[in-house]
Amino acid sequence: MRAALAAFLFAALCGTAFAQQSAPPADTAKEALPTPKDPVAAKRAVALGAELRCLVCQNQSIEESNAELAVDLRRQIREQIAQGRSDREIIDYMVARYGDFVLYRPPFKASTALLWVGPFLLLLVGVIVLRRVLAGRRRNAEERPLTEAERREAERLLAGTGKTE
Amino acid sequence: MKRALVFAIPLALFVVLALFLLRGLGLNPREVPSPLIGKAAPQFQLKQLADPATAFSEKDMAGKVWLLNVWASWCVACREEHPLLVEVARKNLVPIVGLNYKDEPADAKAWLKQFGDPYKLSVTDRDGRVGIDFGVYGVPETFLIDKAGVIRYKQIGPITPEAWEKKILPMVRELEKS
Image (cartoon, rainbow over all chains, first blue to last red; front, top):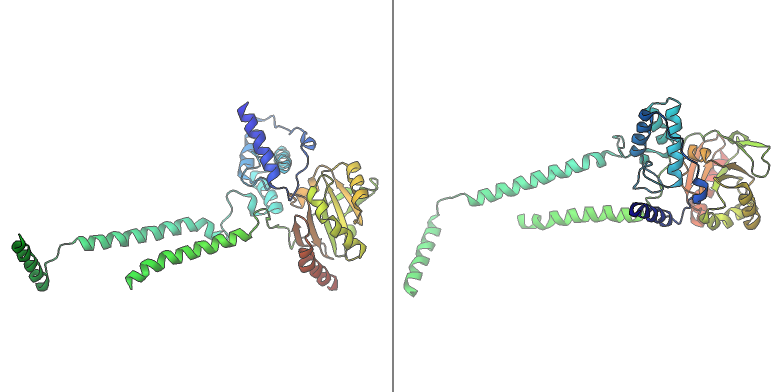
């Protein structure tokens, strides 16, 4: 019951958040999805849907979203599986229409290079900074003999404390 | 020197981050660039809204620069851009074909009667399949198609007067020359 309520509230939010572009009314979305009888095909459909981003509720996959478009695209996936298309072909079909944006794992390209490499680059910078800081600390901690001037200063201070007592 | 670096590095990092975030503020995550721009418009054949016995295909517009406007009677934002389309049609600037997306024909006809019909004709895409071929994910969307049938521009969301004056109309004029 609570889950259903939460799902309803989320769907409602999803609908109102994008008032600028409209979604079709819910009552036209009642057509049932052709659920594949074959459990392997059903699993494939779910796995494919989970790989694809819904363009209406952008942080949900096609499999999760209740947006009208996600329902249509789920139907497309199931139909194409029934027609014997491969996963690759179905993904290509989606990318040809909606671009790399629909992929949760976009391909490595010039435009996505920073996305893929960025975290590792930051990690590398972090490691370099850490090493330099640690090396600096070690250098400060090393013992070195006092210079002549420092020795004399220390003696003067020691002698001085002796007198004030 | 070293002291200066201690301040300069975090400051530089902050500036870079701030610039990225500032750019992000100006971007609309709802506007997903279409992979169809520069490609031939998807082929389709659909019934006309006014005359379901007659089919319309994108080939019927070959040799013309035209707009394909995706609309629906349930679409609130369509009402926002509609006066602009009516004006464009009145001035005869460019032919507009309507793709009536996931709509009831009766509702669609009533809507056009109420708000005016700027379309050369509308076609009905009741199950939204042609919409999917065009990568439609929200309504309204408008495609600018050239004489060779290649999509040159896509407006996501309502056509604003600014987008019309600065982008679409200049492109239409340019494409009509070629």
